[in-house]
Amino acid sequence: MDDVTEELLQSAAWRKATRSGEAGDCIEVAPLGDGQVGLRDSDHPEKAPYVFSPSVWAAFIDGAKKGEFDF
Image (cartoon, rainbow, N blue to C red; front, side):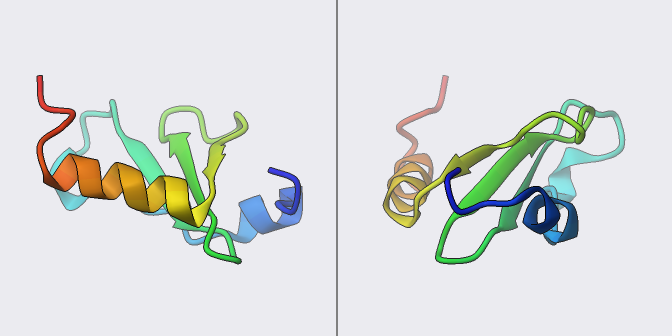
């Protein structure tokens, strides 16, 4: 999170999946510039998000699409 400032996190376009509904238990993602992606708990947006590099985020998305994280 070296290049990510508090101002950038506050102004980020956070969004959650449309399938998450309104029951809570959701995460939100936002592009943070330079290809970085933020990930946070929608119930606690005041807490620091996880910030991923472009390559780590791409690897996660690829794995998710392939079902590598299915339980």
